[in-house]
Amino acid sequence: EQTHGSCAGCGITIQITDAKKPGYAPESALGRKVVICQRCYRIKHYNEVAPVGMGDDDFLKILDGIGSTQALVVMVVDIFDFQGSWLKGLPRFVGKNPILLVGNKVDLLPKNINLNRVRNWMQHEAKERGLRPEDVVLISAQKGLHIDELLNRIGELRKGRDVYIVGVTNVGKSTMINRILHDYGAAELEITTSPFPGTTLDKIEIPLEDGRSIFDTPGIINRDQIGHMVSPTDLRKITPTSRINSKVYQLDDGQSLFLGGLARIDFVRGERQPLIVYADNDLYIHRTKLEKADEVMEKHHGTLLVPPTGEEAAKALPPFVKHTFKINKSTTTTDIVISGLGWVSIQGKHEASVVVHAPKGVSVGMRKGLI
Ligand code: GDP
Image (cartoon, rainbow, N blue to C red; front, side):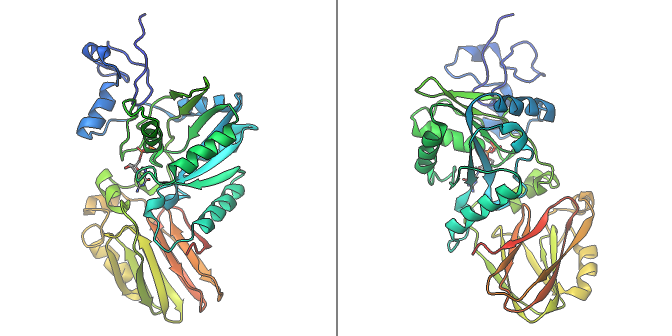
């Protein structure tokens, strides 16, 4: 059978026989300099969502190959959703290969954030998860920030070997690679990017000058991501697209804050103190009395408390579960992170008890304040 190469957008093998199967491209498209499959064409030009054709097993096969080759592994995470964007199980696959950890979307972080602290925190979190990266680089693929630094570090750490780029879907891997291609003057080789998970379908190879290659791997879907519990439209509403501005709420005990209809923070006990919210700037935040919070939720979930948009969408969410936190009196701030939605920061001038309600499956945890 004749082969037609692979799609420049998602890496899948091109076929011209079955329009319903993955990798289809019309015969007329084969003559082009850069061939992309119909699915990528649609994502690119019409922003359509196409169902994902790749299962977790296919992905694991690709990852499995990394351990048996000598390569630099570049793992990309979304620093706005570190927990939700962590690629689990990587230590099993990397073997002895060095790892460079890349925190993407640095453009979203508030202005006064201490980037060194973010880097140290990421090193620490990686270690907790069994990974020991050689270094951590913070970039914005979209805004083109610190790409030179990234390329320099890749150049130093790969020591003449191949480079594998890994990460879960939506961390911005494709955007990052397009940025790299662009900076190398190879922008016509554009990889398909979209706000919908699962755009890259197979390994994409980008040749390097020394005969080695950069391989972009498909992202696996991390089912803990809040993005998999809400509609694409709602996902867009909770995903910040510009720098987050903090919002300060002076809370008394017995007060609650709703972050849209996706999380509720109860200030159960403690002296009046500021709670600083870091989330999408347009996310609706509703303050109420703790004793009325259940009722407010019951009445207004999906209508006033959005996203989820609509009562149907509200009902479709997993049931809410409680996470209890005790904040000790201390000189440093504490962040309570609600994966995918943002975080709230508490100064720790006084002791406090805080309860967070969030859909089951959304990870909620505490960390030392980043600011
Ligand atoms: P992939 O699934 O990891 O390949 O992710 P994509 O490259 O398709 O990007 C996923 C989403 O994140 C898209 O909506 C991008 O526009 C967005 N994105 C990618 N890089 C950045 C970045 O540096 N900053 C911000 N704010 N958004 C980004």
